[in-house]
Length: 266
Image 1 (cartoon, one colour):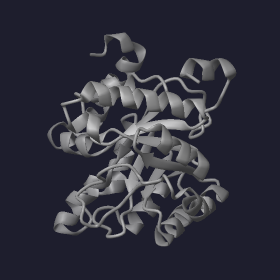
Image 2 (cartoon, one colour):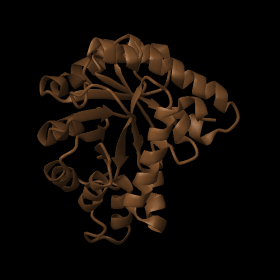
Image 3 (cartoon, rainbow, N blue to C red):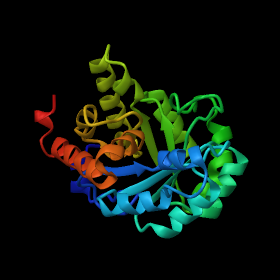
Image 4 (cartoon, rainbow, N blue to C red):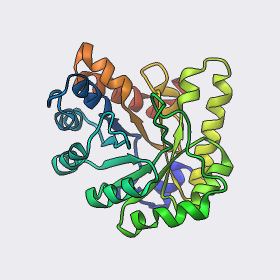
């Protein structure tokens, strides 16, 4: 089902309860904490960044509490949830410790991501095929608590089917390959478009993220079935030069222009 079909049917957005109209922008503030932790202390504050992002037009805040606490810490999550008025998307590994933390924080959505201690950043989508029963059982408490369940996956139909079997409300498609590998980019874009359309057809809300910047965001934002983009590292890096509000406002403009005039996107 396309976005226009959803509008005609009066379907509500799973994440915010509103009718879909534009692509939402979720701002990931993890790397504000990375900078803070490089020297210790309390500056810069992830909460202050989240509040600036919200004021600049972010539709939601994303934060990833890793098992090794390399950037965001437990008290950051609690402070961000208490301080912001937009939805909080809590990224976490599917471990007992992290699920318990999510149940304590009660974010709007919990996005399950793969996690390896040796990786610099998330390197791909969650392996869901063959683990449907295990993950459904482990993640059931999140859904029972009224937290929207999101899975960060590769843009493939079998992964989306597995996410549906697990009971996911949302899938977030991994855009890293599209952003970082120029060879075969057209094919990767087609894969993302096809996956987003398929997710919508089976009733799963579709988000996308990882590696998006000013040069790559428009083509992804133009995909009609994608309802939210989550962007962090680029925006935090760009904010060093121009400030976070300016960086977010430019990204917001590019996203809106792509959705309004998709035929003009290269």
